[in-house]
Image (tube, rainbow, N blue to C red; front, side):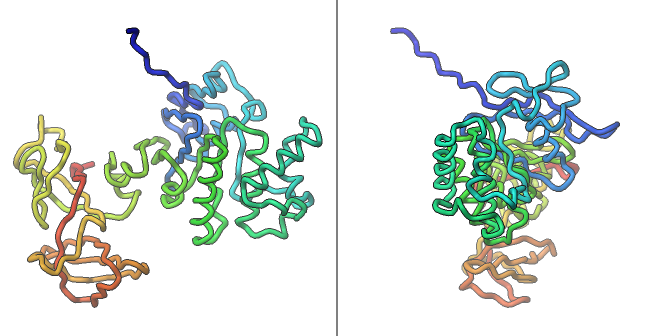
Length: 364
């Protein structure tokens, strides 16, 4: 019986060792990643990390200094070849929406459809209005809509010409926190229903995790980790990723063997072999690591012999985020159900519930 070979799917977007800068300063430094059709990615990082420049390189607003960009297998940018933005079939959504105030919602959405017949254009606009939940509002003008509705119009306008790829540059930054959270989930649903791949740029990890299938954490023009939101939180590849994504603290730990490390709060078992200092050929007893503890790793337990002092608390509705001082003077964070309302200065029992041991050398 002949063997069935696995089907190889060509990436929609390939970023291959791309670098770019201005004068002598590199802003994007040797970045590579791939994006499949229908996949949503996010470039996440602080201001100045290079994420928006990377988006501009993909869009064609900048030409890379080195490296290559491919869309559907075709080269769109390298040192010998450059395809202009209007020929790349990419949609763009900006943080200020960039809607035309003198045009109706329908005319804004249909702006890029001038090559279609009047009937086909009207049909596509109606499809987009329905997709973004604005059916029946095509005759309104942008100033008659809320900020969230305007952002959905901008999204519909970018999707209307059926681009290969949608690029979103800080699209929720002008919205209040509650609306931002709700709209980010709506945008993910809209993108998944449309089947179009997208890249979101943001500094907000909550947006990144709500929208994206895969996230690239950037620092200094490089991607430190390209991974799922779950792995970024639970299995950060670098200390920077561990600090940037989620909350947590580091406690010093002593390695007992390749799969166990002892910290002040007890012995932790690791399901993966731990990596120690460069001077160690392998993790062995006596090697030292800084071990990451997330707030959900430290569990309030009245029956525990280990106690810690509450030195700060933040009410979050269903939970308190407690800052706790250990007997050594070091501090940890703990998420505790809000019916456990403890006073500042009170001592409470705690225990560890760590599924993934994450440790880094102290010099990283």
